[in-house]
Length: 264
Image 1 (cartoon, rainbow, N blue to C red):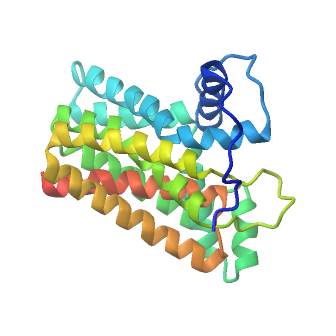
Image 2: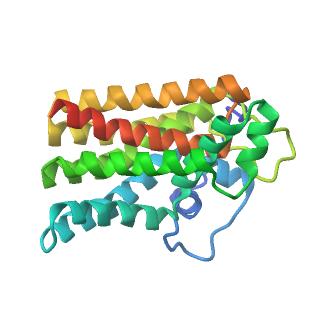
Image 3: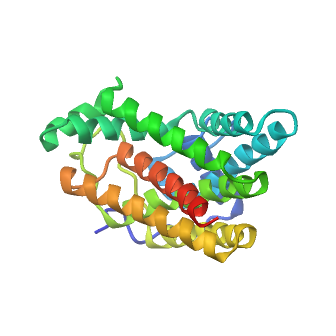
């Protein structure tokens, strides 16, 4: 039920593909990218395939801050700084989606009212509670692990969790009417395979770092939480929004941390 074209333009060379990847970095993060990037809606939609790869960059930043801060500061402080670093790197992009989705789904009695609330830039009670609880649970889960284990989870978790919104985009419809302010996210079949391959490699690295049991437990809980959330907003809204995609990534990331912690 994907709404994007299944046929992609011919491969235009690695330089063009690197430009598409840079657009993904620009869209998902606040990290600097070359100013000469060629922008178009088509190229931005092609960039969806690189969401997990961008997650590797964000995860690498978080893991580096985590291990570096742990050399001089108490472990809980290092974990907090790591989470803060990833939030700063993305400009709270996904966290903002989580808060808006929580407000819309929690406070909107009808589909139309929920979508209206999610457009509002203000954060309500449901959004504050959801964001606070998710961040607190992520910090607590990472702080309960050894530094090497936590660093592996942060590095791989940010990549794996960013496949969750790609999967939603590939299988569901956009909830808002055409002519919305932003172009509806889209991904081709080939693009989804690229995103899945990147996430699979990150999952393999996680299994090597934590063991296959912990990795499977992490993946299982991440898939469960993301699927439950997706089922919720698809039933309420008849599709997804950008805020729902951010919330799905947050749910998957939290599931990875809790699943691995439960096993370990």
